[in-house]
Amino acid sequence: MARITNAGKALFAQSDANNQPVEIDTFIWAHIPGLDHTQPENPDEPWPTAEQIQHSEAPTQAGFINGDTVVWSSVLGSTVGTWSFNWLGLGNRASNTLVAVVYLPEQTKTATLNGAMGDNLTKNFAVQYRDLADLTGITINADTWQIDWTARLQGIDERERESNRDIYGRTCFWTDGFKVQEKTPGNYELLAGNGYVEGVRIATDRMNLATGTLPQDVWIDVRLEGGIHGVSAAVDLVVSKNSQSDYVDSVGVQHYLVQLASINAAGQITDHRRVIEAGADLISYLSRTATEQHGGWSRKATRNDVLNGTGDGFVTPADLQARLAKLYGVFPGVMVEFAGREDQIEDGWALCDGQGTTSNGIAIPDRRNRFTVGGGGDYEYGETGGSDSRTTSNSGSHDHDLTIHEGGQHDHNVTVYGHALTVDEMPSHIHKTIGNGWQNGGKSGAYGDGGSLVNDSSAVGGNRPHAHNADIANSGNHSHNATLDSNGNHNHTVTVVPRYYATCYIIKL
Image 1 (cartoon, one colour):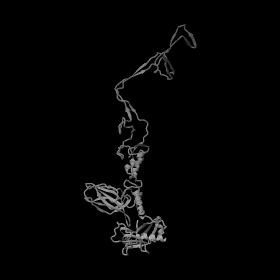
Image 2 (cartoon, helix red, strand yellow):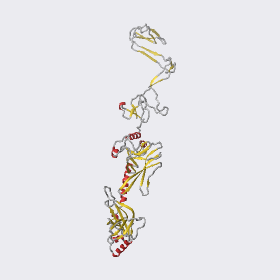
Image 3 (spheres, rainbow, N blue to C red):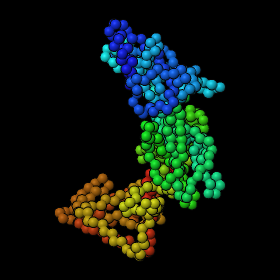
Image 4 (cartoon, rainbow, N blue to C red):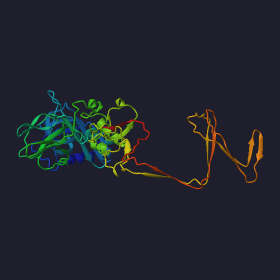
């Protein structure tokens, strides 16, 4: 806050007594040779001489902060200058009275000249005196026009930096921008290009890099520096064996430290930059189809990140496919049945024919003409065996006892039907009749009690159809023993293949 001079206090008191407003109509910019700005302002400071005054004009605006404090403001455009000043004054030209004064470090106001842009400069005088708003007749509140442009511009710069940080992350370098490489044996350089560090866009020309004794780490110190023409990025190289960290300097400027590379004792370079192959057109880079070598919209995580379900790096379609395959159980080495033909097998799959390996090194088994048994118990993984038939072992020469079990008391009836025997087939025989009565020529008779008649017929034969009924007498309960003769050494072969339907066994490559 400016200091009110004794002459200014007297002017305020006189105006108050006369009930007349005080008119502050002159804003003075001066250069006082030998002025010590660290000393308090002189309460009897005189109006500066014409030689000392660099510029004077009416205040651009005035407004009250409260009833006792009033602000006068002066805005100088880029057409004003060029000169230096270290003194500001506020006065009434009619009475040539200096009302308030402030000492400043020497500064320069520049004007636009020969294509070099000048600066705009705003200075405010805040003067405090009892009932000063009423004394000066100021009725405008300073809040309606007093804007801290410095804070506003810094806020715009910070919002832009934060927006860039959201897009590019902590660091992002275009192709070879800021890459450290060996120029000649033992000599290193930094390649030209662009990049972003904490949202600050930086650029560099190709430059030599002094590394000193190896090993060394190469860092850059990035910051936004403000000047009279605006804010721009500043970059310094830092070569050090010590780890570097972000910091705020003595004037409140934020510095961001990023490691570009490491150079070991043998001169080998490890690049620590986060690089995108975008060239100058980020939109084209982001919108193109992702591949194993180049990114696209789907690039969000590294291969390990995707497979593990974590991380915020990059991913290609092949990585995404691998992750989805793992989620759904279709990963390299999985075998399934396929109902189609061998020539209908899709890409990424192969017939299980014992040829080759999968992408993760699993040998492709030969599943043709084979069923599957679960391994890990009685069977080793990958073990093969079995056959289409089963042969019994040789049991040597041997006999088999055959017993026909008794069938109980029974009869056997035998009837020989309707075959006309030839004479040669029928042996000579007689028919004998045994009975208690007889019949002959239509006559019958009886032979006494207990008698019997045995009648032998004459021999019969001939080529005439006839039948024989025979009763086999009851022989009671009995068994039949039978012996199967030995067949010598021998084997028995049995087919063991069940009903089947043949399909292709295929494996994920």
